[in-house]
Structures are given as C-alpha cells and as structure tokens.
Length: 245
Image (tube, rainbow, N blue to C red; front, side, top):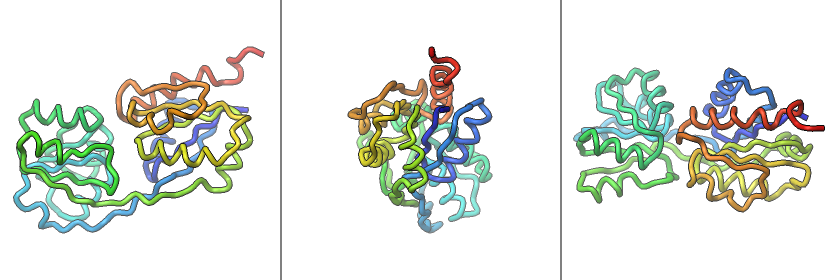
C-alpha cells in the first residue's frame, strides 16, 4: 500500500500544499481533511489610521487587509515567503519578508529598524503574542482579529482511509493544528498504521509528542518550503519498493 499523507490544514492552503507536493514528486496518496475552517471577519478601513507598519502572520490576514482597503502602499511585514507571496498577489507594494515564524519576525523587524505604531492582523488563535512582545520592546502596537478558525472533525471517508492502515505521514503546521490532530487520531484504532510526524517547528510538535510514531522530524525552516523538503526526504524511506521484503 502506498504511503498516505494526511493534510489537515485549512483550505485553500491544504489544496495548494497538495499541489506543491505533486510538483515536487510525491508519489503516495494525499488525503485532504481540514481540521479547521477559516472565516474572514470584516475589517474597517479606519483601523489603518495612524498605523506605520502592518504585520501579517498568515495569508488570511493579507486577504482581510486587501478586502478592507484599496490602498496597496502601506509598509507590510509578512512572517514568511508564503504570506509575502499572498501579499504580492493582492498587489501590495512595500513588502518585507521575515524568517518564517514569530521569533524570526520580531528579530528581523528589530534588525531592520521597523517602526510603529504597529498593527497585527491575526486570527482568534495565535501561537505567539506579537503585540505583547512589541509593547515590551517599547513600541506602540495593537492587534485586530480578522479571521476565526472554526474546528472541524475528520469526515467518515478520511477515517476509513486511515483505518485501512499503512504509512500515514502527518504534517503539523502549528501547535493548535497539532492538538486537533492528536485529538482526532486518539479516537481511532491505529494498530495497523505507521505514523510519520513532520512538524514545522518544535512548538508545533509539542501537542503530538505523546503519539506513538515510526518517525519524527522537524522542518529545516519554519515555512511551507521547509515542510516540503522534509516530507520529500522522507518519501524514499516509505516507498514499498525501497523496503526489504
């Protein structure tokens, strides 16, 4: 049985990552089964008044900003290449790209001398409190919640595929998605599965540390390209024709 990669990211990120996997040469199954749904919330244009720098830590924040205003000239700091690509697609002009996670973002902004007041466009759940860190450093900063992440459960088809057994590759892109994945897998009989965990960071891996896994790995960079690299490095170890009989 070919390996199955379980993608629990929200859409459209899940399908976009699936496409990237295929282009990179992933030969196994890809099971898209989101455990969160993104709901964009309205953002009033006047929240930009007095703001020197907008911070977007996801493509959802970028899209909320694009829907709220026709302006494309504000200074926009993005957490990593994926968010920056979404910003370029929306026509933003002054884009700065950080190293892929919240600590890298804060470090890179400080090294570049980014100035506030700052506005962080975020979801209801975040892995790090960027505004608190900026305020502690002496900056004026505030946050606006521009999307919420609604919890979903595995659908019957996804459960049936998992229960059929075999190698199951589980990418984890955030601590919250890791927790949701662990909760769903805890409901299933995984005796016939070999779980291969690939996390975007050590923090993302923490909620699934108790899972019995055949292998665990942390991406070399905390972004989608790092995750893709680690998954593709895993593939040769999973292909049935590479395993001893």
